[in-house]
Length: 287
Image (tube, rainbow, N blue to C red):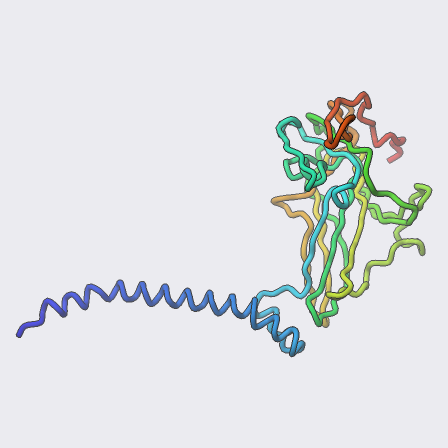
């Protein structure tokens, strides 16, 4: 009995079989990668740390994870933000109690106004000790003729204190230490918070707090954070060329608003402020 037809059907079905095999192969590779990164690596890291450390780079697992907060620390932080000209209108933003209103504005395109707080939290994987090697600020763009549509300030809330803290001055491209009385000291001062060389573990993450100041222009910038584990260097960035962090100051003409608690009952209200934007952060321009 002639089986020519069966042979032709089998030949025609081979491309389909190849597609099935290829799809199955890709699926198995994905499962293997997922299992390696999410099952094998954690088990090895916990029970055989030396093997876990060697698996990390193979599986693309970072030994240190990072989280950032900008431009305020937490839901109750205070400060001010500003929307560059052409951005979203203030009344188009939706504020909730789950997020600081200044963070909401920045997520919608606003910049920190004059001073903002950058919090970087670094945590190492279990069984790993990392060390902070460096922090490098990079200015990506400067606009000395920037215009603003509005400024939103929040004067009530938490924050502040009587300790020394780090400040990065974008206008002067330098890092300083600020004393409790407001004096600026060189970052080499014995009073400066010592963060370089600090150990980073899973039990004791490293929290870095830096005030970023801009008084004479609009700056788009980022921070490169470098660390090392057993002599192997790694890094991550806060901000990027595609999605930079933005700060602005020294713009005189802009509508100013304040976020304040409601006069009666719970809630917050945005009201027009009679405070005019300061020039050069209200300081003498002695650059």
